[in-house]
Every structure is written in C-alpha cells, then in structure tokens.
Image (cartoon, rainbow, N blue to C red; front, side, top):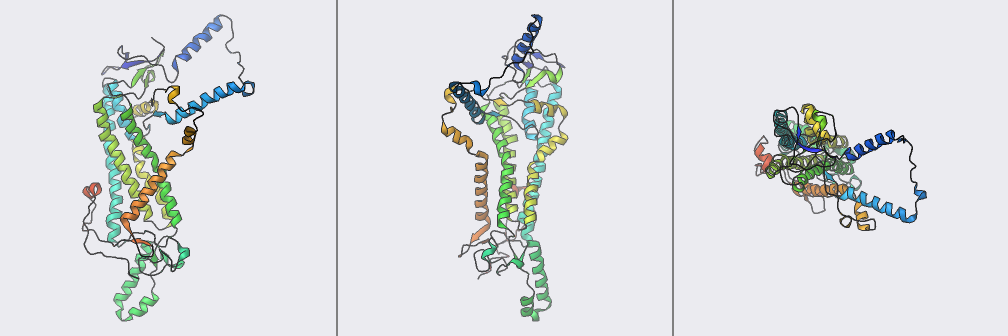
Length: 454
C-alpha cells in the first residue's frame, strides 16, 4: 500500500471495502504519510541507540535577522490571505440540507451499499418533512399578518410616534385615530382597539350623549414605544439569519466549483488496521451533472425560497410590533423557524449519518501560485481583509428590506410623516398555498380605514 489513502469501491451488500485501481492515490489530509515516516524514524533511532526524545531548541524571533523576519512574515501574510480569500467549501454538518446532499453521494461512491442506500432515502424523507414543516409555519405567520390582523382592523405601524420628543405638532405625531400623540396616550394595537371598542359601545348605547362621551372617553393612539429598539431588533434579526445565506451560497458554490464527474467521496486510510467506518475517510470531491441539477432544484431552491420568505415575514412582523419587550422576544423567536432543519436532524437522523457528516472533509481549492496570491505588500488585500464583509451584507439586506416595507405598506403625507396606506379587508378568510407562493390575495374595493384628514 502506498503512502496515501486509496479511493475505495464498496460493493453492494458487502461488509468490507477494497481498494479501487482506477482512482489515484491522495495524501491523507489529517494524519498524512509524514506521521508514518516519523514513526519509522523513531524506531530506527531507537534501534541505533539514538534518543528520539531529546528536546529541540525553538528558534526565537530575537535570534533571527531582519531579512529572515521579513521572509517569514511575508509567507505568514500570504498564508493568512489564502485562508481568507481561497478557503474551502463545506456542507452543514448539523442540518437536514447537508445530509440530503452528502449521504446520497457517499452511497453512490460505495456502489449503493444497502445500508447507505437506506440512509440516502431517509435523508430525502427528512428533507421533504422539513420543507413541509417550515413552509407550514411560514404560512401560519403569513395568515396572521395578511388575514387575521387585517380582519381585526389593524393598520400598518409605519412611523407612528417615531419621535415623541417632537410631539405634539411635529412629523409622525398624528396617530391612526386622527389625534396627536402624547406620552400617556400611546398603546399597543390590542389595547387601542379594545379602548376604541368601549368608546364605540358607549356611543351606540347612549347616542344622545355623543359629545360628552367623545370628550371624556379617550381611547388614546396606536404607536411605537421606541423606534430605535425596533430598528436594532430588526437589524439583529437580519444579522443572525445572514449565516443561512452563507450556507446557501456554500451549497451553490459546491455545485458550481467542484468537478463534474463520477468522483468518489470515500477513501481508505493508509496503513490503517481499523475496520468499518473507522477505516474510511469522507471528502467532498465532485459529482455527476445529474446529481448537481437534482441537488440544485431539490435542496438549494427550496432552502433559498424558505429563507427569503422567513426573512421578509420576520422583518415585517418586527416592523409591525410596537412594544419594546415583544420586539426583543420576537427577534429571537423568528429565528426558530430557520433552525427547524437542525432540530429535525438532531432528533431524527441516524447515528451513521451524523458520524459521516461530522467526518466529511471540506472541498479545498488548489493552492494558488505565489503570483496568484496577494502578497504582503498589497495594501488593497490587507484593506479588503479588514472589511467585515458579512456585516456589510447584513447592512445591505437591512436597507433593502426596510425600503420594501415602507414602499409596500406606507405612504408619505405632506409634512413628511410616514403613515399606513388605506386598509382593505381580504375577501377570503384563509391563507392558501397559492397566495403563499404567488401572492395576489383578493381584497375588498372599499377601504375599512383611511388616514383621517387634518
């Protein structure tokens, strides 16, 4: 056997794997042949009476010349830049989506061994179950926001009472009830609608006392408790869920950048006396074109769609929340929907699947030549490394969602206030899959509420 692990073919229904003569040898990425040579050198030194345990003196920076320091740190900078800009592509090791991509490829590499084939089929069953559960939860949230809240008479929050220091008399100081905000007259929608109901009930019971009731029964106004808290919570929600975008892009780049072909994801450890799974190594390599297309449409497209809908629904839900405590709790709770795939994997995935995904090594790009890697003197590369790219992406996403919210739900008055557009009740009382996927829910022509004129 050579110095590196060999690619293996696992015969169907067989209990052991043998080396394949068609696949090239590769160096062990974790232990490697260096460890074997070191062991041989140690045995040789013991046989010749030379002690292998004698300590070696470390080279101190103070003992190096300036030229040596420059050369060492130049290579150090290049390695760090390679880690950031070259990197590697890995699958999620704790997610149903990662399992649905990896396990079928492991089964294919082992010639569809019975156990691995069953695990591959189970991964697709769990994937479908996860998509149904996540989609159902998102539909329920959409039904609450687009049907139930509107039937209850809720208007969009927009910027009502955005800056209480300017009220009364300033912009955004007039509430949906047509009166000016003050500190003691701001309520959540539930309290505001209840107080309006009580006042309207008195008016219906005692119409002859209309003026007296209007003067003494004050329902207050529906508005924001703290706009800064609302913006902070929505941004933190976007920042927390931006990692899912990274995972989606990782899946996509694995399909695009890995070789297209029937390459094995399984190899045998070199000079190993272990058997079973312990004798094998799992590495992301390439896959046939058909598998890439299947994974794109079955795994990546549903994951990307659900991610976007959760991001928009969660953002809109938080923008429509007026209470400080509910904003903080809502920002945490909305992330639960995107974590369901990890919960399902943790509770339902089999032990062999978890072990394989835990040991699956990332796809590593070929190490570039020195001329292709930014050197230590390239200040542009250093500046690019200093930019928090994921934070920048989160900020861009936040701005885009914020612009969409104000464009879709609000309108601007003559004094610059952002108020809710006229509200129309839906003609249906349920939120079907058609409306969830394509929108276009029918509404009544006449609005049940419009911003009162000044």
